[in-house]
Length: 405
Ligand code: GLA
Image 1 (spheres, rainbow, N blue to C red):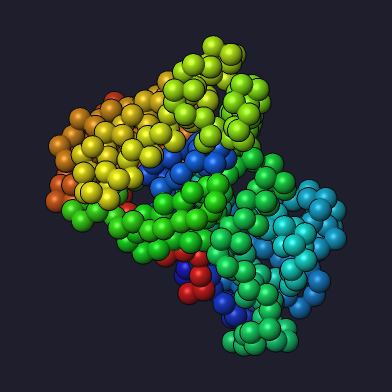
Image 2 (cartoon, rainbow, N blue to C red; image 1 turned 180 degrees about the vertical axis):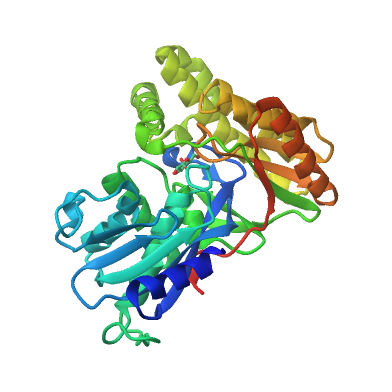
């Protein structure tokens, strides 16, 4: 069942009323600029046509009741129980509930009203696949709470929005989601995922400067399909490997800024300076930071190529990015490497690399549109033959960001 139907029907069953609203927030695929968002670099994601859907209405009590339809589980919290990560009855919150509870926490911290909510959510963004399922949950709930802030009265079918609530621009909602993830969930992620989910634009890539937060759209090149290939291997970022790498980048900044006083982030280090000073860095720190410095340089080279329609050269840079994530940043796994190697050997593939944090999940491929279906079929066949795993491969459409539907 499509998640939109699933959340609506589950809402009716569970709460015995119609949902007042349904919202969605998409996942994202990142094309270039990996593990650079928290180093003030440039990223090039797109929101995808897979999303978290949420059916919701104001609750009749102080208590928010959240149903995760995909797991058949429920959590219920009050504003008082949120900071302690507990349900209203004092039992620990399930991990999936950290994301909505974290958003409620961040909104409260920002002095924005969080109405008690009855909600059911479900997603067709596969969890742990590098497509930002957690950011899409956060952004769906941010839209929901924003919507409820403007609802008159209590839970009735067709509740009217009176316009008197708080309204945050999408980028501000993204920043709140990032804060929820950093300070509540405990993953020190950057802004890319929440940004893409909040700000996505149909048929466009989103080029974000993670320092100034200025962004623009670039068209998905004509004749090019974005193909997402899911290795079906799952990962979890809460287990610490992501945070360790971010820490290594911060360690590198500390050391390099002793020699280069203007360095605030790895964004400020040129490749030449890095090469000159790299012997000052401990081995692992050097590798992690080299990936970041070179990746930021790659994005500077790549964007003009994309704008000029030089897709083959742009794709080459995506391939270099994968090698660097594999050998320097060390966030790839054998299945991702197999998926990328096969893709790169197939006709019509301009570039292929792991997308998102790594450790499992998906690859992003830019492929000639006319052969995209054949590419997907052959990639699936060869991947399964080599690994014994059944991948899911699909041609994705860049989509609009989080919104009511
Ligand atoms: C995860 C994080 C993002 C970003 C990517 C890697 O998706 O949530 O902020 O760091 O990894 O580019």
